[in-house]
Length: 113
Image (tube, rainbow, N blue to C red):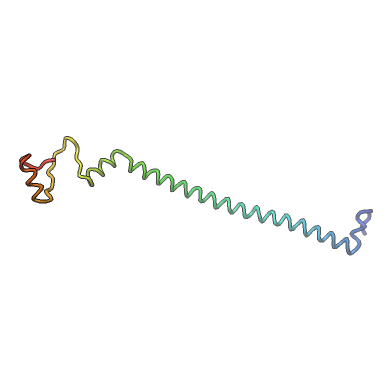
């Protein structure tokens, strides 16, 4: 038997029920806290994965931007797509129509750019 003034309550059925409910409440509240911590840890891990993925994408886009804004790329693009040439370079231009040739024959003997 349990001895003591306050512990005599546990000998009654109501005291045992109260103790069982108290233990259940304490375990349930701790369990809920552990579940919440577990879910937060999973959310933190997902956010860290997203952070690393976004950092990689940012670096990739930054590299692309640096490539497209570099002077070498701009010069190469201008040469290939806009048919621009260096000041000391001479090359023959394509005549697109006979009217282009007629307009330039009077000015120069050959069509140079």
